[in-house]
Image (cartoon, rainbow, N blue to C red):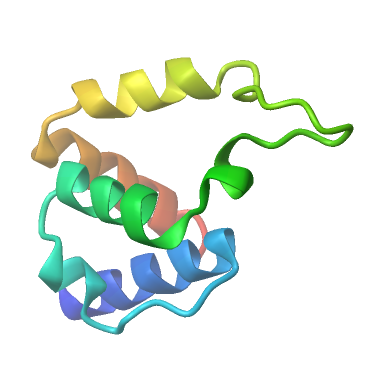
Length: 90
C-alpha cells in the first residue's frame, strides 16, 4: 500500500466512524485484522456498534456475516478489494 492509499483509507475510516484518527493508524496497525481490532476496541463504543433506535441492542442484519467475510480474507485479498474500491472513487 502506498502512502496515498493509506491516507485515503484513514480518511474513509475517519468519516465512517465519525472520529479523528491518527495519521499513522494504517502504519501502526499494518494488517486488516490488527486495524479492525484497534477500531473495535479503541474507537467504536459498544453503543455505537450495537444500539438500535428504540433502545434494543442488536447487531444490524447482515453485519455479522460481513465481518465474518472480511475476517476470512488474506491481507493480499483485503488490499486488492480496498484498492478496487478506492480506484472507483477517484
